[in-house]
Length: 244
Image 1: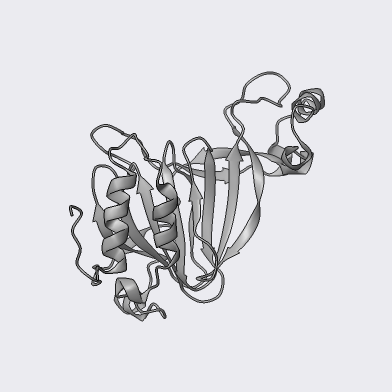
Image 2: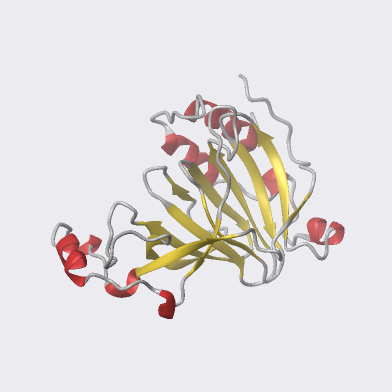
């Protein structure tokens, strides 16, 4: 029987047939990723492999597959370390924690709406998504291009690792974009809010979708944080082929 990573790679190739298209069987891919463990990828769940080679690096990346339509890899977050707040412009993403505990802080873009007085702003208008603590027992997280998601991930109790699939990758021949980093504005930096616009917006939504004032905030783009960098670890899990 084919290894789980082999089945995931083949399913990903079917789900993402080119860099701009997603087939209707995304659920099949997510279901396969649900069952993935560190052992399936040849990783030690205590992260000793990464820590021994790069004891000072905040994050270690294991590249599993890089193609023009999608990429797969593992990020190992060393104790207390984080991947800073960043975006995934126009991408599909699937994320599954393999071991450890990760705090996921997320925001969703509201660029189609403007709740600021005085027109547009250089800031990115977003709403807070409730924080989550992710473990190996947590269901896979996924996002779609129609939702403008910004998030950060921090190891909260020792080392932690997660597997992810991105489609399309950050830079391809057909799709050229970069990862951008952000910080949340402090309350004192917030633009003035037009409460009437917010009220009109909420009147169009059902109760579960209404936007609370305390959930409305802004992000500003920043350079890549100097204290964030990745070193690499070779993939030593089962071999696989993309084509059947």
